[in-house]
Length: 276
Image 1 (spheres, rainbow, N blue to C red):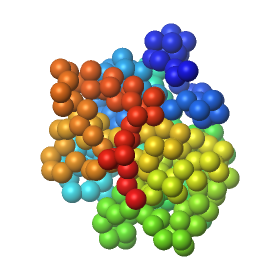
Image 2: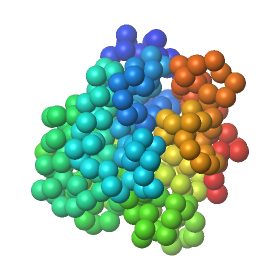
Image 3: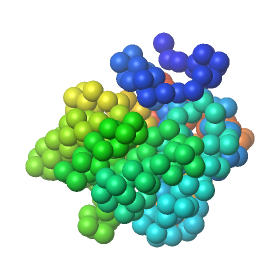
């Protein structure tokens, strides 16, 4: 039986243990990016579990060509705005480019996002040894961490563009190993972006921590989309793994509610939204 927004203990705050419980119970986790208080209130009303203040704001809010120019100050600013509109959704913030290049810098950046920005968890990209060292340092200081593997937008220049990752056997094995490593280092949540659905399903089955997919098929423990993509208001071409939920509906509130319902019921992503 799927948990509806109105049934969630009168909207008690979503916590890390709550997300682990949802994975164990087979209940889908619903996440959306968010950048301001007004949209945060819509996410709250629809019963979204996770509000992710993504550095995607550099592209969809600031009009930049990548996430790389986004600063820590800008992330803190947007986090404070979202925190004013969201009281029960778990607030996660991206650590921006080079703000977690070593454990000491990551601790300082995370302290700002949590103490000033009001976030409950920070997200960082990568699963190599250095990233695991940072995750371990944050976890040892009781900073909840969401890891991010697959297509990691802050590495766009190294990857050669926004391309699916883990297509061949070696790359898939590396992603599986990185998923194990970030969990062992202390990550509490794992975003899988633009990886083949079969690989994402395997990682999800092997993982003790919940997985959140974006362009990673329907078998992850939850789904996340960029809010502007799922409302069909992002300039340019919408990613295939997304859908315009506002089309044919009368309001933004109705679009977000439809997204929540389809993720909860396992209807999104549909076949046409699955890559690989």
